[in-house]
Length: 257
Length: 293
Image (tube, rainbow over all chains, first blue to last red; front, top):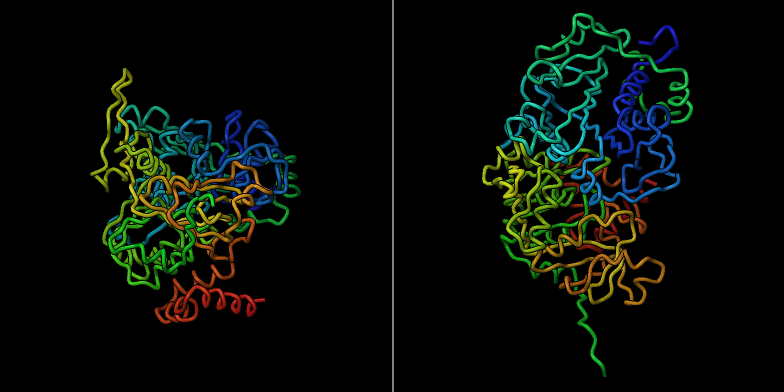
């Protein structure tokens, strides 16, 4: 649904909400997994957080801010996988990962659906989720908010939410920092009662009831849920003219969503 | 005549001749990047079985799983990168065709190889705490810091390998080898975690040629870590081998389509590409490329 005031699309709103998740990070490695997170991180670097360190998603730190998947830029560092692991353990990193499932306590699953011993559907595997969630700030991007994604309990815990981290002991809880969950409908965090997922804002044109209906667990929400901010005119120009002139973002969040 | 170090050049099939049923084999590269695919194809042509495969996995794992060669898989992910999920691996897991799996975080995987490389029983880290990595693999234990913090950390067990297989851009005939692309991945770590390492490469060059146009820092492997060298151009196909070539995306899509299709689709792919030796594979790939052009 287009916003009547400045013509921003849902994808633009999501990009700005993702950028906001990286706004206060300072001079750390902003590490996006996937298309909208890459757009949001690059938008943050061009606006609210110019100190953010970004990469080409392969092995180079980029000094400039090229368009999505663009790499022809000044290089300011080398970040092969072995050094990514160093930075994860060191902690100066904020990763935004995908999530096939997220549960009420902010645990994430990207490994498989069903029983681990013989899954109904094998997915990627744990990847870096276990290490990310006990070492550096971690956020999640969910392009299709639905009860199949937001579940009462994930089938396999790959990313640790705050409650499980606390139960696992101080070494797990010390650097556990699940910051934001941004979906195509809303912005959430895990600061609800007993470390549960909490609704922070609904995107323009989305009702709280819609978000509740698309969530497979009881969602904590304040009496008055704010609306996610619309992108500024400057942000819209950066998104449309500089970062994503080809409109790749609409593949993940279609216009009219 | 002064003597020099040994010439370790051998053929793909000679490398496979050094392998045995039940061995633990580490495969270098990452996902669908600089994988020793010609060596994997040579294993597929052999009768080797009951292998334990240790890999940041891509089509190496998919192909070996589809052929039923894996008894135990140690992995953190299996992905084709531009095609996120590996259909042959998915099928094998969903059919229960891999008898034993060990699923680690990708950083735990590095710690396990490093422990093996340093001849330690384990290395401590945070990754895994609170997750199902420890629930599904209860034999992975924790260790308590003996210092004032008293933190309880994961004791990542050493991932010892009988053999490591890696693919690099250039090697000399003694096994000094260099990567020319953006990322060394962990091929040096695989080599140090293994009793023996076999390197395939795009080109064997004189030792002096290894550093002609390339910084010395790119010399990833020393010959003291290497048991055999195979020159096998396009040996990483269809994965990346930057800058010699990038991933063959069209071929990878065809592989993924066949792997996720019917049994007949896969049989057709196998008979077209995997029935013969490496030379016939490369010839079939060339004709595939011409058809698609």
